[in-house]
Length: 250
Image (cartoon, rainbow, N blue to C red; front, top):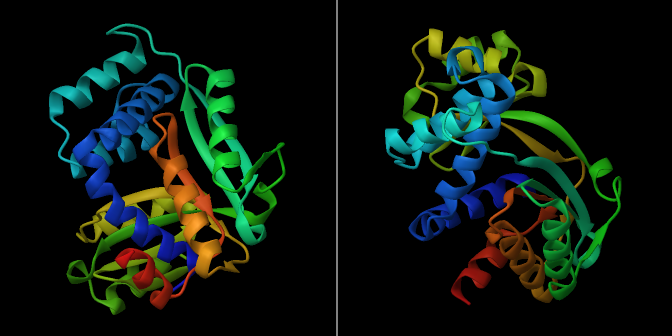
């Protein structure tokens, strides 16, 4: 399993805890509002909004909350002004970290994230400090029982997917960034239930970390991810199953 998939697994487990604190909903509401502001309030013609709404439903967000977020984005229910920013930095063992943010105060968020990097054993850099180590891809996830491998090869690869892999109890379909919605639509047309489809940043090369470096790095990434303005954190880490088990026990 790749370092990206390992970190995805960590994030999926962590999401359940975040939901209890309301952090997942807060992040999703921001994403819905921004998507609606940029592409309009009709999800059928706004793929980004559709993804955000699907993600919100997957987290059991009430329809009223979703609709209010859409209206905030379109200006029907008060103005919303979030700016999309990507911050870059480095962590222990020379790891690269990208932080996707939606903020209404860029200076405040930058100062807070810089402090998190510094306290967490890392350093926030200028534009280009870490982005070179990642590429944009699409990830489509579905339950293993939703389709056979043969079906996925036929439908997903036929629609432009690059790779299909087992990821725990899910199938993970990787696509070029521009093809994620095409692949998702092809699967749905073939009546294959899709859990979610999103754009991700995949590390070109992973850095293997263990021991104290792994502990410090994972704590840094989790602290960044906990910030209310942070939507996603991407790190080019590689951690063994044994090391993850040891850290989980700790």
